[in-house]
Amino acid sequence: MLLLLPSLVFGGTVGSVTKSKGSVFYRSGASGSYLPLATGKVVEAGGWLKTGRNGWVELTLSDGSRFTLANDTELEVASFAVGKEKREGAFSLTGGKLRAAVVKLAGKQTDIKVRSATAVAGIKGTEFLMLSRGPANVLFGAEGTLSVTSTDGGSEPVAADMLVQTTRGYRPLPPVKVEPGTPLAQARERFNEATGGSPPAEWGEADTLGDIIARWNINHGHYLADSGKYQEALHAFQLALDLTEVAEIRGDSLLERGAVYGRFLRNPEAALAEYLLVLERYPFLPQAETALFTAGQIQYQMGLEEQARTRFTQYLERYPAGRYRGSAETILKLLKKP
Image (cartoon, rainbow, N blue to C red; front, side, top):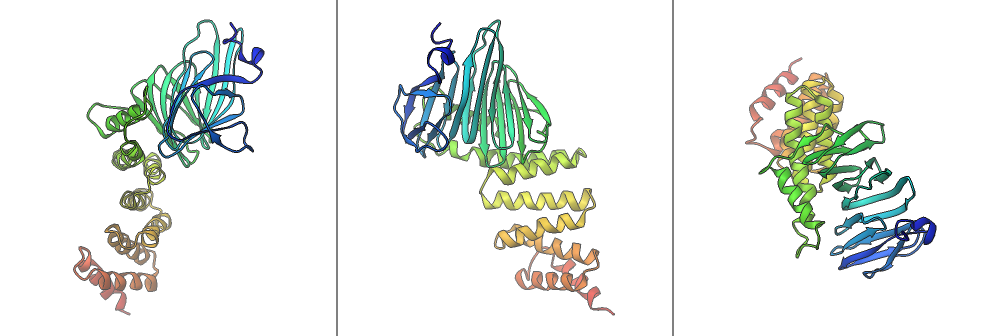
């Protein structure tokens, strides 16, 4: 009974650290300083948990629910209380990898939320995995069902063996089934290893989660665009950008966004902006060749002849044997005519 009434008996106590390894830290409030954390530490409402590069920690709440933080993760335990008829809790994931296993309590309403900067996961009694990186959120359902709501108000359910994503506050993309043998299944397996009953021996594979899901999003964006779901395709490509720092994947994402704007949405200005970003950020990647030629092509079609002439001249200088050489030479000849 004492454990089930933390807000009444212990003031602000919500649980304790039952397992930990590596660099793990705790602070009692947003303005406090992080201090090293040991197993058995009592966690109070308003407390923050943080793991370092090799850190891992399991927080067990007073009702037996568990929150497991993998490395490079920060979580605020804003509030948690179990009353006679209702269980409530508020948590904020500022970044990292989290597993939440919330036990079901018969006869009690449950209102537990895990917030990131751009989304809210509403929990009734379920288990799920949540990756938050910058504005991007990735959620894998493990058991039961939860809802994910973005800051624009859109919401999608996350059931077991399903994936839901959102970034920058956009409405979450529709749920996707995690099929065995796919990159998504591989990512989920690495996520499970990082947040299971004990930490992995090495963190290398867990750290590539964002890269795997980003690459998958490029393929998923292709599918969405081919299905005529152009805004969802742009969302998937933006997720790829926000989930990884791998330059090649980011370059591909920008090219794909440019293609959707240019080919399907008839928005040459937006398409041109994506291609110019490739040239600005990744001028030495292979993607820059396509970006340079296509930028010139768009400017030519928009009647910006001087800019187009400059682009095609640059293209022939940088890629004398490039795959668009013939087309660039043809358009330059047309531009030279009075």
